[in-house]
Length: 191
Image (cartoon, rainbow, N blue to C red; front, side, top):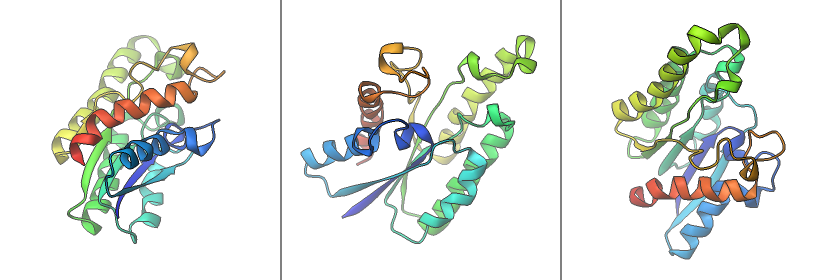
């Protein structure tokens, strides 16, 4: 049995839902239906930043990782971590995984910044360049590292109140199903 490690934040953890409703569990259902020899591990933590991820990845490096799905970064800006540091942190995580598991296949989930999370003091003339810089972090990291790339994990879900919990940030069960499809569109080719 091979291992797929889904390493991320509340989007991966399935904030506000049971673990069986989070997209990693839904991926496991697809894998089982296809009789593929993979076990999906949900390593999502609510509120995780890329900086915390650099430290936390260490606890997974001792186990086999055949496919590494990285989903971090959306919590960075509200916590004062700007795109250049997000990029450096994501690269450190990738480097740590690659140094321990050089044959591991890698997938990066891209994210977009909703304008609503940009701190008020940064809004206005800084907002648009910040949004573009954040988007480019994921494109550049995926390209530089030869990673399979999910352009926007929340495609079809972000901003839709019927697919999100009361906070309008975290996908509900129906939203998580769409996340699973967004991931599967890329992951299925990797497998």
